[in-house]
Length: 585
Image 1 (tube, rainbow, N blue to C red):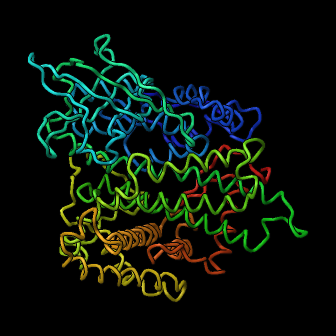
Image 2: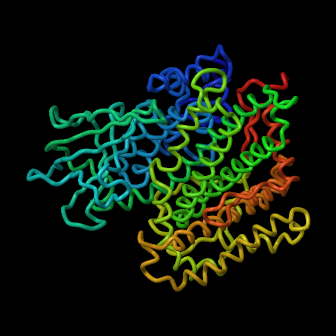
Image 3: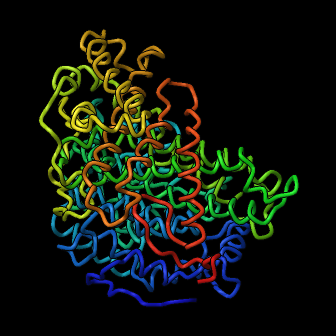
């Protein structure tokens, strides 16, 4: 293993993403026991990558999920995303199965748990233990109100657990499980609660494990289930007030939907590098394949897509710190948009590899694993359609209260160099109440930069179209009938959520560009990246993104090659990777 500088599990460490990157080493180095060959061998066995888990424990990954007030290192969600991208770009199974599944569980405790429960959760994660979260049941999918698993009061005041939970990550490997359970037989949203089940407190013979589920992607992630029969547990396992389980989950989803899908951009980073290694060494028609115009076009577009995903998710992650009352909107939009962009980009890259994209051996074999693992971005934790359903009923209030102009969003939302306050878990709201400030900032930002259209007309064309579309949406949504706000809405109704999400993407990207004109990286100050990502927004629902204009295609491809050759990351903010430097310097 190369470079083993490790932060204290309970103390701060500057540039922790860089520390973890060096700790894990070059994934292409044949002498690195944490490299791609070992990752692929574990995938073939459908096992978690044991050496990778030990390396992450040595780094103290669990501390990244624990707020600083409880002895951990979680101070900024954008930093957590960057740290986890180093894991995901090597092995998404490690990212989900070793780390993020515990993070998903813990957010519920930071949001609604009492002091004792928070301390217990912190102790587990700081000790490199695992915690699972059991929300869903196969019979009900995303319909959490239909949950049948019970934790009902017994005659002695204790809770009696009955029922089963299935397809739960790390259910057997976890020391504790956060469970969504029915605590009242009556129908309604107040009939469910969350409970924190410490396995050590489960009486013998009252619980059994269900068989593990096999999967096509994320093969190493252990998905299983638990079944309880009249299992008594003390009432102190309840997380938050009884009947508030759905509310807690909806608040927690705002954190996890935003951060988890953002981590998946690490997969696209590795996929692009894998394609470049193949295409720079392969000759077609008498020249390197990477010199073919169509090949360059696909690569440049995928790089622009990665930048779009990074920009939107970065703003949404920062919003959780500075405008938590608005993030019920942004989190659903991020999951809906970013997952689709990532999946489409991976598919297009697979066409460049030809037969190599599905070969499970050799120097490019990591691609087929990443392609399979990446599919989880679209449905894991919450499906894209569920995110649209979260947005749909909020459109009329947004039209009346926000889209025709609101106060400007705070500068901290966009300025990457500014400090952020701790994540205010206690200030998250189930609904934004029709108030958010990002969407209307698009028109205001374009008006404040009248010269941009002359330099890059795509900014004015796409940005102006979306700003105008927001006004059209306001007119449409103010008078929507109730039927258009439910799961039975027409296709045009669902298209409205797509159009609105596009406005949020454009506003986030424009805000980031405007807010970082003093940034040290000239690429981030250049409006060309902004023009490129706006060009990639699919402004017509159901239609693919437009091809990049020739000048932007050349710029994005050149930037991609420069970063590939210098072994630096492909997102908005560069950082040095542990990979071998193709330039040899």
